[in-house]
Picture 1 (cartoon, helix red, strand yellow):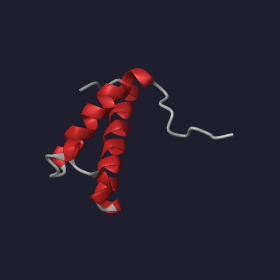
Picture 2 (cartoon, helix red, strand yellow):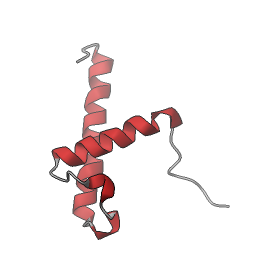
Picture 3 (tube, helix red, strand yellow):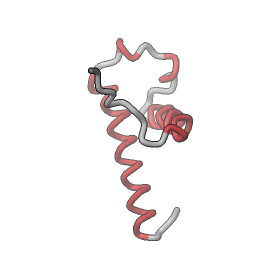
Length: 70
């Protein structure tokens, strides 16, 4: 039986997460990220995008939990 570890916890957030991914990649200097062949990027380049997204999401959650919305 195959497990699906990539299942979204909140499927409704998919579009917002994709938009955030493109914005994050652009901030990191990958302006054409949507059309790039991700298989030709290094693990470091792909990791930067995911890692930076995670950092921003954690910061957003911390602000929300502290009651200090941006």
